[in-house]
Length: 631
Image 1: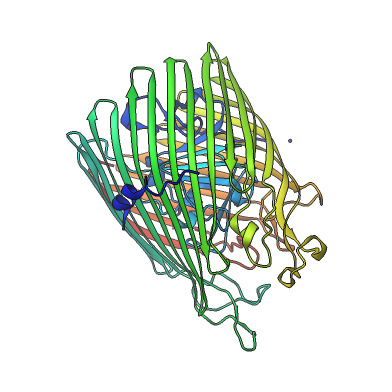
Image 2: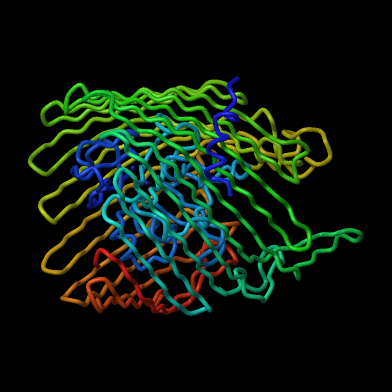
């Protein structure tokens, strides 16, 4: 068994301190520094032109991130076809992103190629990441285990933070809003000779509202406001001693303090007490050193050593702590014998360790993953195939694969089909949490099929995808005592592989630009069902639609965004459908300066994201933005 401990010492020193449909969106250049046509990395692990991948990928570029009315990462993602959001209240509260109806733990989140999130919960914590440091987001909708290993049942969200790629550049932004909210960030990036650098800092806070409403199911309501504060920073630098050869290092840290309503049952009487000030204090750190180089005209190799940490302290007067540490080695090689063929071979070594005040001992496991991928173009046809084998110290070996094909029927109209398999590993809570965890749980396994059409003509585009994903060996709560260990702590049930799920749906999307106008629309239909009971899976809406319209005239631009979310089952009730209307306006005072205003939830709609929880009402924002390169 290899240990990465020694190899990561240098890193520590540096880091220190989406019957079924989903669509292809208009994509702006994804790797601007290469000067190539729009490319994506998430579809094959290597840069590949977006119109030459068979998977369902969406790109959210820097301009869309900057100009969107969304004020959080998860709110930005939910406006894309195939993605739904579940959150314990308003911005800053615990958030879960469902891709094509898969559970929150069926989404892999990567920051600059490094897996982040909680290994105890087994899911990514999107609320920990702000938008200020994000340069680009790529979303793979559909199975991704054959490329990225465990947990990519619904898909993969890959985030790229800022990197210096041109002359020195300064940027800053500050805004104030309702509910005692404020945000600010500053950044500097650029190149100097053979060196590139990027540095950024951000801070945001809000008093919020009480996350829970009175008379909630479990009696946890506290009338105080449940606000949040998040600070984050990033440092990234690199050196290019020779053309095509770069050595880099990066460090990212986010600190989130989040209030919530809960209860304690403290001795000696163990009576319910909802009065303490409950808080989650979450620190997320990601550090990496990497090398990427061209070995001749056809072979590119890359090596990354990374470490990520997720440290959560949660509670009121009694504090629980959950710490996840991941150390990862990735060695990847891409061979391109010609412009139309690519072969990728990658090895990943991942070591995970979790410490918790709830576990009797530290939980740890390691995983070796070997990936082989091929993509090629044959006239009007594209072919993509990849296979991965994971060897895990807890659940043994798992092999997953994916096969995709696409053909251009007529100029601008492409038909594609893709089939793939995936798996989700049991979380450390599923395995070890006292009175719940079962050490012998099997990984969940999924098989997915999808068929899509995508049309692009100039500034117009439209797409449709239908998909069907069946997942077996679902890990869930088993209330029947007879299936659980004999120990008294399991008297109320335990974790168990209990059933199968059917995730199928259809997504439509369209975009149009003309004469200052920019329009984008999505329509989603989702059938997410427990095949054993025939019931809809919790917190999934059967339909969701979005519409965004923006108009620019000279120094002025205005925009409107509408989101319609259907009814969702949750904890024995059916949550009502809701709609939000967001308005915004921008005025360019000077080439580098812009005054910004937005009105979120302008109709002041009552939103119940989860049973008994509430989101924010109408919220106004006013801000000022500076960009040294011009706006």
